[in-house]
Length: 479
Image (cartoon, rainbow, N blue to C red; front, side):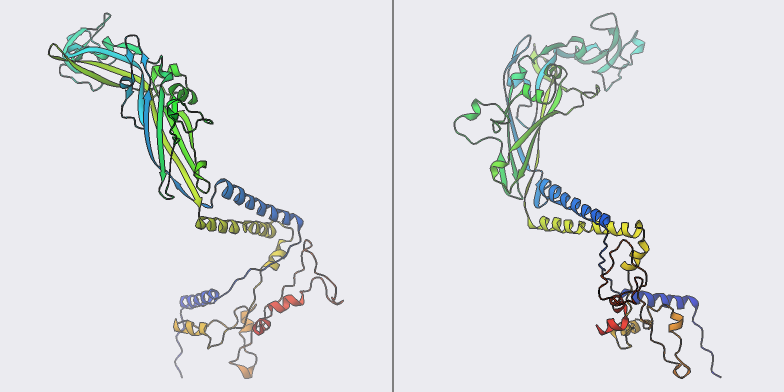
């Protein structure tokens, strides 16, 4: 008696069946099926979505954004400034060398409009400012000798001395005396400041397109000596009055001159290089950059000192300056036609039109009254006879250690298809029947097929002969 064959474990058998199923499904081919649905409401939705997508790409992407161009942002830029004008305060006349800081003429500079002067400061001991924390005192015991406050003016000596005015006392410090708050004098320089003229010379370069341009017109008749900026008539005369800049930024000049502030002069070079170079023009805008509504951080001031000798001792004049700081900011972008972005955006537009089909399919298969009929018509599964033992998929499966695909991949009842046909043909297996044609009745929302030539025995629920031919495996094999 022959020994019984060992049974394959259930897990191994399941894994083999899964591998065979995946191998068979890997070689399936899917192709779209075109179905014409005669439904006016669905057609209106489909064409409306297509029209909106088309308008978006034509108007916004290609006309507004100019996506057919290759672009470069952030041009290489150079800025040179020059200020001219004189003004006066209560005690003297001020010229450019005194009220413009720094004098180099860069893209950031300050125009002093008000100063607080503390003259004749010398190294010595004096009362600390009352603005310094814990500076007030009643006796020497309240002052610690050698204590240094980072927000103060000097090193404390340990003595409590009378303040510069009034009956208060503060701790004595070793510093430049008198301190700023004790003897400063305020002077306003903004009387003539609105008439100061500022020349802003700017040149830009786009290296990708080898394009350069400046904001000054190339003329030899002394044009810059008698012109001022005008947005229409004198665009290439970049000479601005300080009062005009502050006004365009929406600020009050007197208030700004007293407290100080930061004004940005923004130059934008937005160039379409498909046009002539004369169409690439600078656009100027002005706005305040410091937060004026936040008292702790609004305004602008800085300190500097002037040193000299008096009777052999070093003396200085401390100046706290309030002013208008000008920041010249240059930005822009240039674009020129290029084939690569044009092809990419055209392909994106054509692909996006398919969103209409996806949306309508979703409505058709989800919300329509007879969505099951539509689903049955849209998705078909065509079965072909299994491959012979000599075909290359079977050979490849054998090489990989897997059995050939089953001969009945699409049978409706694998158990019946796998039964022998008779006792004399115990090893022969039945050929799987062809996949049945759908027999569902068409939807009422779909237009019926023309009935001319149809026999009296053909009902509305019977499948057409053409559909049966398409789902017949033997017919497909002959094709």
